Length: 355
Ligand code: PMP
Image 1 (cartoon, rainbow, N blue to C red):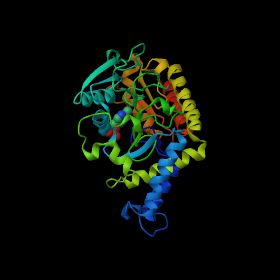
Image 2 (image 1 turned 90 degrees about the vertical axis):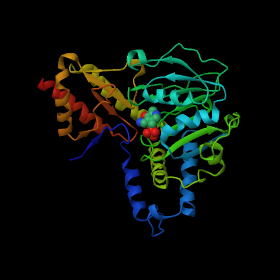
Image 3 (image 1 turned 90 degrees about the horizontal axis):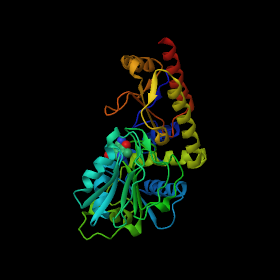
Image 4 (image 1 turned 120 degrees about the vertical axis):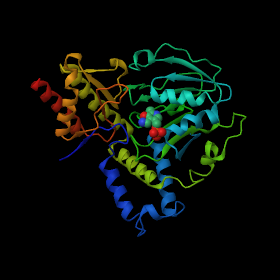
């Protein structure tokens, strides 16, 4: 039976990505070798790396002065690499959830951290507003999409300080004005590739302003200067990333992704709002179009397990909510077809009729 994949990450990838990756595992670039067994310095793989970086620049319309690097260590490594490279005295952070809190914890090892606002008081069900970012900070860090809580900042903020964004779970889901950011990072395992590689986009003139010595591997400059080949890069995820990027381009680019993502999210939120059994957990204006979080209304709470089983019988996988929110989370990343969202909506309707 066809599975409808709503996992939060690692998560659904396009069929194009999976088929081409599988083919390269058998025979990469007609070399008669698997991509798993060729040198990262072979001209064939260097071409993959170059094309992937060029396509990211093209799809996100990066202005001059920005570099794209592929690193290991997950987005979590960026929680410390960012302050290592950018924090001299003080940084500002917006606390919008678990991942933001983890980034804050690491930054405190490197300097003063000003948490300008937090939505922890309401279990991160909204994006704080009306805060001010001090002008004397080295940077302001935001998490654009809060994967666990289902809130999202879908605009490019205007701040005087350098802006750093963790876009792990919503990169490529809308066109961005990259010039507003000094650094963007994203673990690959949502909208790009299998886990194992992290995308970093950095404005080069944001670097070189801290006095502390930076270990070679943790210094962005190392990876920029060596074109992400200072050490052996995660070749397979980078190959897959290139396939996803090609697929985005063929689909009409990031604007086309945004249109589809918004439609998918809109029909699901409409059903959550209509259906007597369910309610969304996030204030409507901050609802994420990537991670849709919802719970059962109090009078139907005991049906939660039953709905999970019912959904599974329809081939729906990965909708169990994160333990910090409970209920359900349907992740609607770029590769999610509308037909799968419709299967989930039909299941919700059918289950409502039964109760
Ligand atoms: N930031 C966000 C927004 C995430 O969703 C995640 C993981 N789901 C991370 C950071 C951590 O990523 P990683 O597991 O690649 O370290």
